Length: 457
Ligand SMILES: *Cc1c(COP(=O)(O)O)cnc(C)c1O
Image (cartoon, rainbow, N blue to C red; front, top):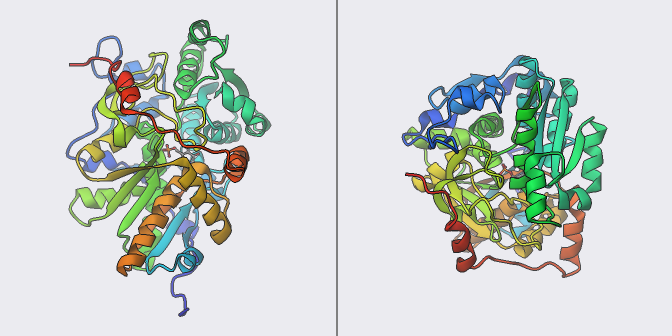
């Protein structure tokens, strides 16, 4: 092995860290479609949205022309506690695979929440505090978002009320306790605390809940409680804006060494880490300054981009949220019970949906047994125990690197390693015991959900 000119980890010093978030929408010719009022089907106004979300976040949500938003100093200081996150050259993985490809990953798991979600949680808590609110409500599925938000709220002394999908609440008691350690209250959803929860329980007794259902409960709680607003950890434009810190740091680090990626890969649930990672690169692509292959990776059991419909849909099961135009499987879609890999949301960020529809990025889906195989391989070679979500990106990065091995091409691959998997050991256990199976929905099943999409003209 020759001398390694690129360090194993490329860090930035504090002065090199981004001082503004980048709003990708400013450079999009075809803007993402606006959120619609579910009753009137008219675009949501700032006034309507500000009943649900904090005022500054509403402004960010609706702004698709301003390219940069300064990161307030309080947030930059919080970022300094766990950022910049390292950009790692995966020398060990390259060697093990025997590929001429150069592989880099941006590791977002170096904080207690264990994922990139803290990047937006701290921003959303900051604006809630600035507005003088008492607290915020939210939902959490696997628990990463709830954990990140709990940390952010405790930093700014805000009350944090989390509706946690019931099956996760029961299966992941440790996540729940981490949230409570940071002072959050955690309620299994559906619950009897909200009208929508009661209604869902009456219609589906014994249901173990879903993200869409927990969102409905959290929104209802926020709009009916004085001094509270609702916050969401993915999907929304404002979340992609905050997560652009991932891509901006990545680009600064790569530029330091004159490295230009050929392929950028990220897992896609609601689209926030991918939207953040690709932001400055996609910006260059939109402005005609550079070209990159950008690949979104989703689970075969929840394939919104690869098999969904591009249409207006509800963001939640209770249909209390605005309508968003997105690639969607239908708001009633719930991935099969054996799906353990996260990324369970039925729709995709409307920004990413539009970019995908315009042919500016690719999407692919992977089976969960292949995902866990890649996760375990990566853990053994690179040392980090990856989150199942992140492992979707690992799978495709490895596959692309193996293609380079066949063709001899020295491509540069960058992927997002969004988090660690310590709370997902039950899923790892299933994989190790050979008890993990793959379930891929049939066309007929997907068509049933698609037929129920709201009709908007
Ligand atoms: C939430 C989460 C994701 C998926 O969410 P996106 O909004 O699509 O980024 C991916 N990885 C980890 C570790 C997560 O916690």
